[in-house]
Length: 189
Image (cartoon, rainbow, N blue to C red):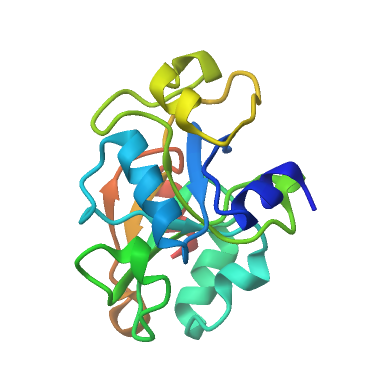
């Protein structure tokens, strides 16, 4: 088990290099860890976060065929997908809308096999994204249980795409532009 996976399993909060910007991660089922992550960021508790997977089969499990095919073509990479969540999985990540779950599958082969994590960018709420570990606010680094340095990252956060109606209608929309250009998504859709 990696140092990252051990930290998450122990209820810790980790600063880690994602494939876009530095992130914060914790066990998405551990209410205390989630509360600590949100407190470190100064993020309102009702604001949703994404669940990051490190295994493609696990990330796509249970998705309906059209949505699964699209995400299979686009992932791994710098994309966060907002999906219907009728089973209300990972409620601590969903904020006030338990019927919507954001998922992310980064291109991080070194973390293959790590458990899913609740993740958010390693910055203060509303602050700039961290491209280098030194860009992560000192208060976050000091408050985390594990800090991993991955050098300089691309610095563009993930593209957030709303796929909640995609299965039935083929409709999708970009909620936040980011690392994956709209034309790449359009070509796969």
